[in-house]
Length: 324
Image (cartoon, helix red, strand yellow):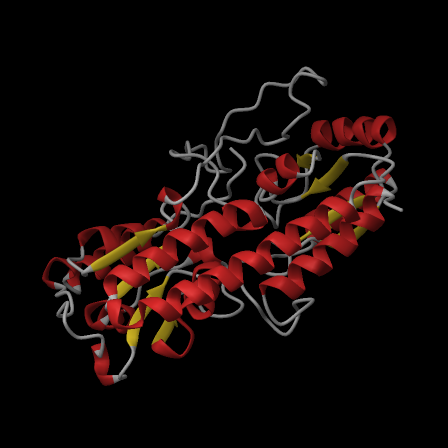
């Protein structure tokens, strides 16, 4: 499967259970002042969800992200402090299927407003080496590197501006319902965000229109939706932890693909090691570059928010694909 999902340790889950998810209490529906912030308190699972909450909520919301800047979202283990944040929140915004510990915590909580982004758009299954399964005669299971099926499809919907806009519209409606006193502002902010996302979509369409190849190589197969949207083919190094060197068989296969399809670049991420990408690039005579899945913003990110990093991704893809 193209989604790299880490195991949450049994010890960590036991600790979480001991903290009493069964006793979490939802905030009163007639008060948006959870935790005495004077705002509509939203707990977001990780950066793409927090970004939506902040843009849509504006001055009326107080957003807390469960995943800290620089932390790999798949590795998140819920802490006692985060349990307390959930107890005080008015709403939880998350993406079911990406972070198992978050799914469990929110699922067991009676929090008043639970917004699952996965239910606000359509999810698809993406093969590990999407698009080349038939052409190269490979059969790839939809599993992560631990051999587990990822039920419900690929969760990386925010990397497709069109799907992300659909999620934004759903989040806006949920905020309007949960905090009706500020519904007009939520509606206005949602419309502005959707407009910006449509403009980003157009930048990708025009920016990638005249290219010499459709194929790009990544260490983490997070870009299936982006590839689908713009007619590209993502080739991921399957079945490997980011810190593990690619197998000889996969390197040989990618060498063939690179030669046949004019691949120039192996992309790696900002939040994980670049060892795999550099090893493969060295073995295949390719260069390396960053293609950021925008799972978090750090000092190493090529931008300060979702839009800036996505535009940096577009620049990197244009170079790699020979776009003019």
